Amino acid sequence: MRKLKMYVIILALIPALFITSCKKDMPEIVAGNSYSILAAYMEANDLDLPDMLTDWITTAENVNTNIANYYVFDLRNATDFGNGHITGAINVTLGNLLTTAESYTDKPIVVACYTGQTAGHAVMALRLSGYADAVVLKWGMAGWNSTLSAPWTGNLNSTGVGHASWVTTASPATSTYGTPEWTSTSTDGASILAERIDVMLAGGLVGTLTSSVLTDPSQYQIFNYWGETDYLGDGHFVGAFQYKNINLASNGVAAINPDGNALVYCYTGQTSSMITAWLNVLGYNALSGKFGANGVIYDGMSSHKFVASSVVDLPLVTN
Image 1 (tube, rainbow, N blue to C red):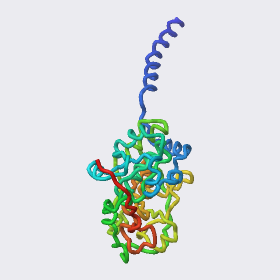
Image 2 (cartoon, rainbow, N blue to C red):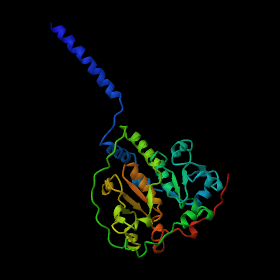
Image 3 (tube, helix red, strand yellow):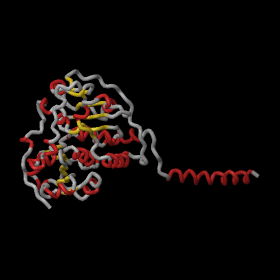
Image 4 (cartoon, one colour):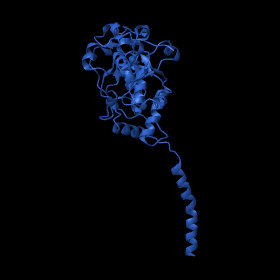
């Protein structure tokens, strides 16, 4: 009788064992801790923002002089690329950026676009994906040749000078917020990162013209990525934080409200494009201030202005 009871128990347990085994083989949706896994992975692998913003930009003169030492990825549309590009450049999109890069691993990649801003998103994606020496072409193709300078010259704006929304007051104190909430089908940091990079690239350049922010700066949580001297001297959006502590190591990202729209702006929109891309990979709702201060207080800027000497007038090839 005792043996019979044992057989019954064993038979009852067998289906449960199969069910448990099947559950372990099924992919899980990881809720709540996806951000924590990703953040820990990025910090442990030197993918924190300060690491990403080290030697991330280069000049047209340097690229032209050392062209044999670089691969140039040009993000402009096919027509504009065909009408004139850097010798040897490869026409790519944000969508095929990483798959194209797989064939170009033995030299640093320089990413060019119209103004150097979309290139920031691309270079951040490349650097987070293992291409640590990828760099942005400063000023984009607008700085390479004067025939291509219109995207910059056409967006220099001074409407913020004297505007009520542009002030010289001290920076307000930041608050502390929780982390972004999102889910991933992956459970390890590397896979989650790859997934989040794809999401960021699919969204394209996320930003807004800095001149348009003047209408209602309060709709954004604004971060000015300057030193305090320029923040007070050149001025800033009313309510903007003078804040360069965006990072994982000291949890500086906690100053960003994950439920709001964070606007990051700099002098030219190139650094803020890099920062915005990095934040969006982490799951924040971040926008880059397009053209930076050049697009809102151009005449009131003391430095970092797009000027005639910013254009080098280097050769273009067509095909």
